[in-house]
Amino acid sequence: WIAPILLIIFGCVVLNLLLSAFAELRNAVEEVLSSLTERGTTILLMSKDCDTPGIQGFSAQVEEASDTPIPRSLRSHLTFKSPAVYIYTSGTTGLPKAAVLNQNRLLSALAVLSSNGITSKDIFYLNLPLYHTAGFIVGFIGCIETGSTIILKKKFSASQFWDDCRKHNVTVIQYIGEVMRYLCSTPKKDNDKEHKVRLAIGNGIRAEVWREFLNRFGNIQIREFYASTEGNVGFVNYVGKIGAVGRVNFFYRKLFPYTLVKYDTERDEPVRDANGLCVKALKGETGLLVSKITDIAPFLGYVQNEEQNERKRLRNVLKKGDLYFNTGDLLKIDHDNFIYFQDRVGDTFRWKGENVATTEVSDILTLSGCLQEANVYGVQVPGHEGRIGMAAATLKKDVKFDGRRMYQHVVSYLPSYARPRFIRIQDAMEVTGTFKQMKVKLMEQGFNPGSIQDPLYILDDRAESYMLLTAEIYKSIMSGSIKL
Ligand SMILES: *[C@@H]1O[C@H](CO)[C@@H](O)[C@H](O)[C@H]1NC(C)=O
Image 1 (tube, rainbow, N blue to C red):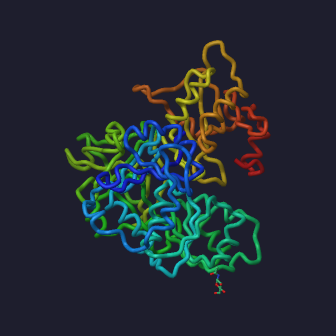
Image 2 (image 1 turned 90 degrees about the vertical axis):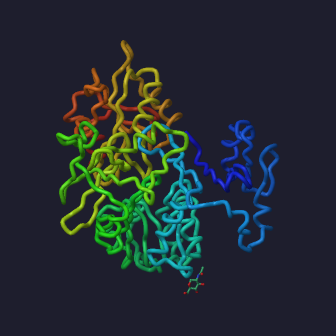
Image 3 (image 1 turned 135 degrees about the horizontal axis):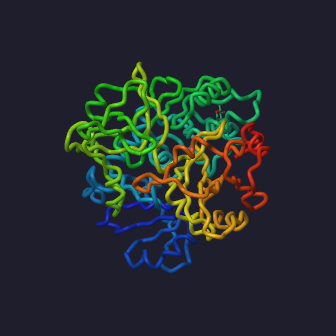
């Protein structure tokens, strides 16, 4: 699994490639050191010095560095189109891919904070991973632009959250949906409303959590937005309409023509009419968000990955020969023009704030020794955002399912959020005419041993094995007494 490393390019002319890493990533960098130095990459470690040849300590220079602005000559060759950062994203399929963000995209993403009225007087509590666009660009770089103070928390902690906010007089917090739910499910306290937080900005909060959050923690403005690292369209809900990610804005839509088109989730592709064009979704109807690729809304794509780039392009959408970016997200626009996020399509689902690429998980499962084929998808569990991983699989001929061995395999190759929690053993795999695995029916059937005849297993961390999923375990999951 790729280590969360940010490749920061300061323009190849001046510094060549420059990789700066934090001390805990040192081992991961050392593993690939020779190939990096071969390519002439300069590697800096955020520590005073470093005894590994080829890696230089960096923090002493940072402390000594002048705080006057960087000379113009060093950045005079940069344009809006120059690459600014690569962000690794699991995207819709396959291995993590390096999405290119150019200077222009960086500037528009960091404007999220200033356009929401955040100023240098604000104190911003940041506890999201800095290897994602949200934490790094919207939050971190956004604060550099507004001049706000950042309280940087290494890891989100629901129990320390409000004490941190009180201690540092935090005025703005950044969230993903899961964070808000975790905060709401902590035990109630008398001082829940004692803090200075005036605004929460982020994405993925569910309507019922939103209401509960306001009830519990007082009058905090919530600014929910929609965006993706590699996408060319984004929305912000400025008015605080509960559940929405934004509202249709005439001028924005003129500049960035986007539309929702009807989507066939079983076939996993947009619905096409007799002329081969997509069909616009009606108001109130869920559809796939697509956004026209233009000069001001370019699709920058992934680095050296033309195949994946082509997958994100959609042609012949409203007219023959037109070209759109396929967000892979299903949204809905209501009769008052509010926009709601619904789901992600196809090969990715979200769990604990991370995208899980099902094809990758399925590849790893089939390397375990006992599985012939594995079809990976996400299933919904009451009280949780997103979907938890499940696999429907067939066994190799004359092989028994070995829960312990499967557990060892899954734990060594997959991060915890991507591990299938449930495995369903089938006699045969259902595929479409083009050999695509069918997921929708399986997703709907879920993991109820009362209605599914096939053997079902559940990943049990304490037993370090996949155990038979009994009706009793199922009941405890549904009632929330087993936490997933
Ligand atoms: C927070 O604000 C209070 C009063 O407004 C002030 O006394 C205190 O020093 C502040 N704390 C920090 C860490 O700035």
